[in-house]
Length: 230
Image 1 (spheres, rainbow, N blue to C red):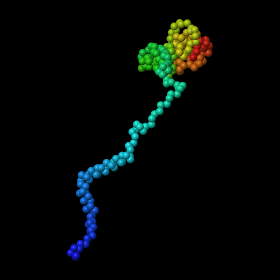
Image 2 (cartoon, rainbow, N blue to C red):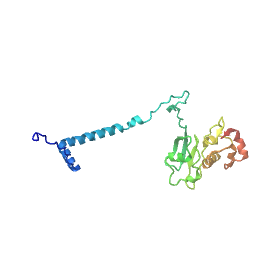
Image 3 (cartoon, helix red, strand yellow):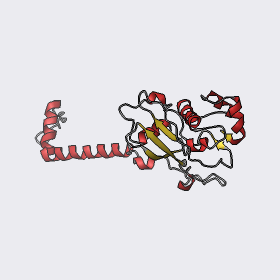
Image 4 (cartoon, one colour):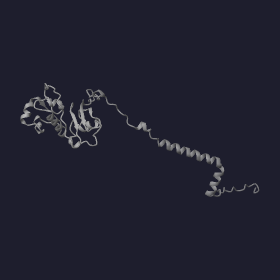
């Protein structure tokens, strides 16, 4: 029968298209703000963790430094110098400083001291001292007498003590006036002249240099040549 005939089935209509902005709005509404914030934080944590794993931190500085290797001591090496091997100071000398100084008398000096050091040790020269009459750079000798004259003063002669002639050679560079006066042919004046020449010009290099001293000639030098040395 026509009344019992089923109605024809209509084909399904496609859903209307949704714009991109509308889709994003619906998606945000479905996710919600809390899920969105949580997702962003989770994604950030994953990104930071992956970066840290791929970029490991450098090793500590103390681990990257080279290790010092201690080398064994070589057998037979010279030991370090000890304090006992230090060279002892030079021996001292005693000289007599007289004349125009503030504190005339005996002074003790190193063996390498000069006439200037002796004058300084005696308190320094007086205001009217004639230092040009001395060789301040000359080395001092043990037992020597250094006389600092005043301006216009003649170096005085030392009176002989009457000592007997020495038994051994006399060093003319270190002998006192008394020791020189005891030599044959040398009196107080010549002894003083030898000391003055020594102070003004430095030590004698040879015995023949005594000929440069005033009052000593060839004949006088031969009288005591065998009794002196330099």
